Image (cartoon, rainbow, N blue to C red; front, side, top):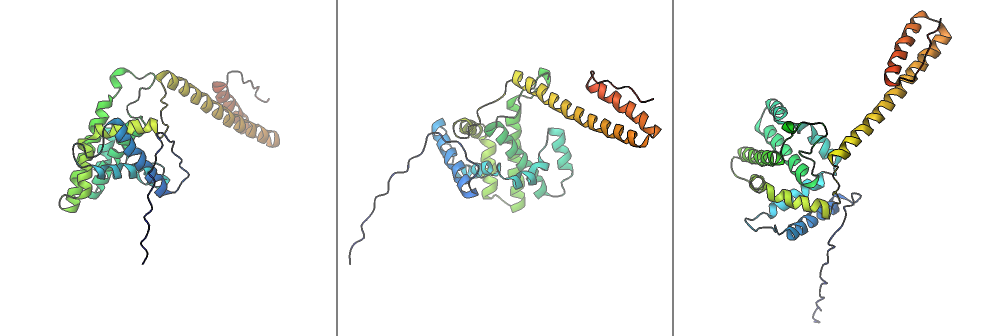
Length: 264
């Protein structure tokens, strides 16, 4: 019998920087996320299992990152996400069992983790907002930690004891700052999400959006006015004259240059 010749495997080489392509299938995108997450941990000096075993957290975060490109997941969980603490209290008041409460806390914790780390969108300054109403980033970190702790607690209740998932959620709660730092590095180095608008840029963006909305409203009012005017030319109904005058008034509020002489 001839002995089988062993073939030496070539070492796997990774790119130090790679942008995410969302056109691939789910397994490919998941492994991409996990690969980038692990490299981000190495480059930030926050490697896995440094303080405690947390490779389960790596898997959890990779799945969470991958879910952000899944429209079905986003649609399914969007109605659980609270705008603030009072909104969260309202959502929880409608919960009828511990599984529902677990889901609400976990979804909101996940949302904050992604907002703080992957997208850097939590607690951003908005033009015109008084400083006293701005929520510090540390508050969002505290909320994320608390929500993961509560989700872990409810997970224990659902399984009548500690489970792998409850342990993972507890680790996320205890190490929230670490995982946000890793995701922040990953955001710029691998996902290409490094651009964040300054307050001044947001101010001008708001003005642009308002101009667009004004243009759309003006176009709608003009079309309604022309439809009414055409109907009046065909029918001569007196009630349409009053409607024309009212529509002309609304048009002038949006466009002061608009002129119209009511029909005799």
